[in-house]
Image (tube, rainbow, N blue to C red; front, side, top):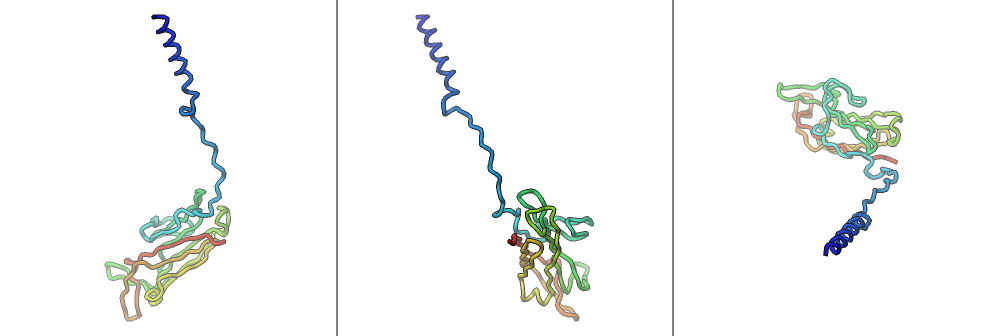
Length: 183
């Protein structure tokens, strides 16, 4: 009887020793991923809501833009900054009523690499501008800057009238910026 128990012990022990070799317990190391080419989804993100998604400049520089307001950075999946959208510059004489600022025109400044896939390529600059009269009629404008197409859509804005004409209430201005790579 003792010999039978010892035999059973060795059989169970031998079977347990074999279990790591069973397919259900084999650990498989993942094979390395092939290099990825990020044509679709190369930019992260591709849409910004400004001023909400922008980073405050805080009297500093973000990309080529300084010193106030906010700048959104167009990043790539490879980890480098490829473009920027700066919200906003006022070109004409702004006015204030102590609560908000009004301007006859607004400019969204833009920058994009000449070659989106080469972080060492030249950073080109451009802009999209509106007068108050234009903004009332035309809510979407586009510009190609570097290898990027920037499309800016006015999502929210209020206007005021003055003796000099209509003014943009810049405190109410909200835009969406869509960015795509141009071949």
